[in-house]
Length: 377
Ligand SMILES: [Zn+2]
Ligand SMILES: [Zn+2]
Image 1 (cartoon, rainbow, N blue to C red):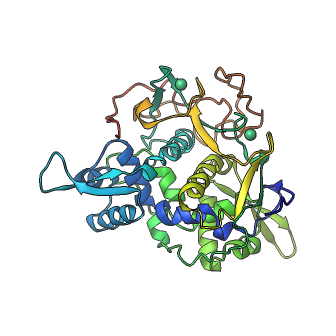
Image 2 (cartoon, rainbow, N blue to C red; image 1 turned 135 degrees about the vertical axis):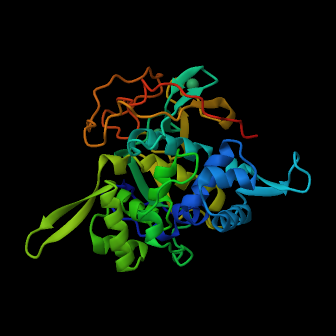
Image 3 (tube, rainbow, N blue to C red; image 1 turned 90 degrees about the horizontal axis):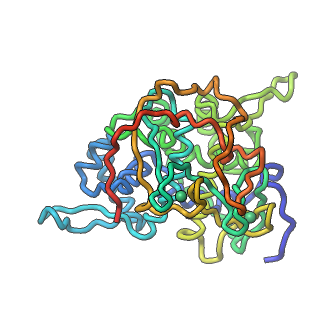
């Protein structure tokens, strides 16, 4: 493929979103219950009854999700070593590589999950012994990845256009009425937002700089009523904001809020996982390039203290705790003046980094609470 000029992601729409790895990844794990099952698998859960209790899913729903995750090669169903005659579900290597994604989701929830959701927990990196936040960086140059510094260009599979027919639809009531019924609330909020096959595509369109209804509709090939409902949901969740751009007749566009831009690392890591495991034979239809170093982006999710990549067994957590003194979404400063944690020479987050730079951590003073954790093997 020729080296077409890269354009900033935020300024040029990509016609290739429909064939992207994000789309493929969403088919496998872009489902609220799948996200929660994977979350619990990383906490060491293996048995049906455990998943049932922690996710709050119905038996029928959980059965379907476990089957589809096994069919997708994310979990493997095997006879239980502890209970003869019973089965358990374990993460495969493909499933285990979703760990960075769960770390990024955690980070987002710590900042944005609704008050009282019981989500926060402190993460500690066992390798360095410090409390930390997961941060998403470019593996080539070490800089924190931010939306403004990511460009796209055609990838080896640019010519193959894949329709979105395989993206399942989901009743919107499942999302708008979503409340967490399981015993483990962490990641439930992000699952409510991205755990629907369409919403992440609408978000991806926003990351590609698309703001107007018609443009988004053309890009992802979504029915107008479905798109209207998703946009409304994203506005209600303060991921997008609706702004007038024309008075007569009145027309509106949808812009990412800080909360929405903060989901960019999640999209990056999801895309990278999809490129690795789900890319079509011809390769990914587009590549994301880092402005800072010019390399194709391979995001690494690492410890904010020692900057080493995070592995499941090396992260321990405590919580959940109540956000007694939590800063509400409305009162959070858009730009934090909090000092950044010490950073290594390789990492120099841009001052505008929306997703990574130091910010007031509302959980820094959170009372510690034990949170059951067993290492996923
Ligand atoms: Zn780079
Ligand atoms: Zn560390």
